[in-house]
Image (cartoon, rainbow over all chains, first blue to last red; front, side):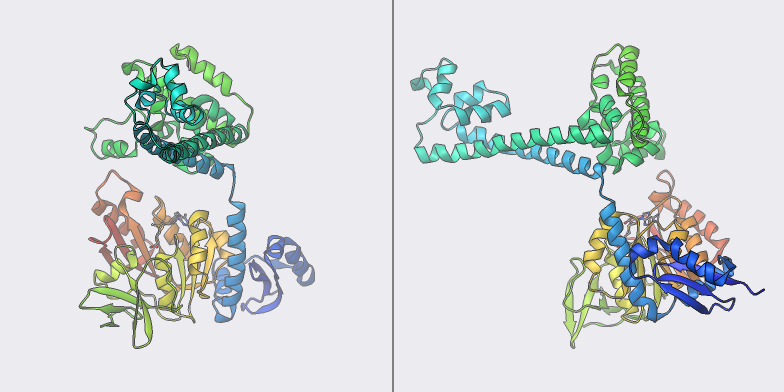
Length: 318
Length: 222
Ligand SMILES: C[S@@+](CC[C@H](N)C(=O)[O-])C[C@H]1O[C@@H](n2cnc3c(N)ncnc32)[C@H](O)[C@@H]1O
């Protein structure tokens, strides 16, 4: 019995003869139909009985059938539709984590820059305040809330002894507008930190427990997704962010391999002795790697247990 | 003065040492390329520093194997810089299947190329032959630039599945994406050996000085 072939693509479901002529086709109106192609293939099978899936040379010839200008519009429309759909569906928590962590980093840079400006500017008026209040956030918030006199009183300085000038109301107000913006940036930062914490509670609670919210976000940002983080060996995770040093070592073994990358900032490493760095970094990366895998496969929360093991092993609290 | 180059559908301004293709969608830029009009024809400048295919031409290859009216499978389209020139070359009666697995770049590609009716964006891995099979046809030419460790395997798989008999395929190789520890030359030699088992190599050249540590192989299906 001459066999016929069944072949389905985004354009439709087809029955081909052994000479690769399409004897029947069900054309898909949209990608929804393509995604339920089984239904249409069943229909064709019921009607035609025995239909083979083409392989090798048969498959090549059937794909050749579609190498025809008349299918351009179909290929364009359906591929565009399916690709747009997949892009929509590709949005997930990992991407929110990356964006929120990125925004926090940029807010920090901006705050640093603007606060320096604020201190310079405000110090024309009340330099004692900038000298006494070293913390940036406190500084900006206090000068917005309190008058020069109030502040000087708090420092036990007589207003006459201040080396700042008496400014006109409009000059003071210009400075305080900047302080107001800076304060709202701090508020925004706090909001995003909270948001990030919530996201990680849903997405990677274990990783966050081991590394902290900010560092977990940095690792996800660096690799692009929790999936990739979960798939890489712990030894790679350990040196993420130190790729340059790693390549230098791989090219020439005289260069020492890096002990750590992004995880360098971790309290466990910061608080340990130099000669212990390598050991601690390896143990930390091991636990973080386990945590990432558990998170990726939506396993139970074991972050506290993993963290306790690290603390006990190195006798360092974090 | 813009005139025909040795490569079909590619133009050059010899005095200014610049390459061009004819804009399929006059008035529209795809990235930041300058547009130049001469005798009522609008050309898009094609910079060898931002496109490996242009670098291949700048390095005096004899043929890029992509012709007017061709069907092209382009693997690793990114945001569409080079794809757009391939789309110019094949023209309105040719077709380009532009494949990339990263949603972020595909989003840009869709906006960048939306006016071109001869280019279909496909968000998929070049390694997923069965999925690709449902979205494309046999093609005249394959161009691959995916900077992946297993890029040669992927290239050969696609040739076997989608390239017509006697068709040509181009492979851009970034040495560092295969192995950062070894010399590019050594890596290119290994790629050559791996290719030679299954296809006939018809051209090989490095893309210096435009693209550091890159080479382009042109092969013919046996
Ligand atoms: C060097 S860029 C390509 C640049 C582009 N060819 C041009 O000249 O404008 C490499 C691209 O390959 C994509 N890529 C990497 N692996 C891939 C795979 N397995 N399948 C499809 N695309 C891949 C990446 O997302 C990236 O956009």
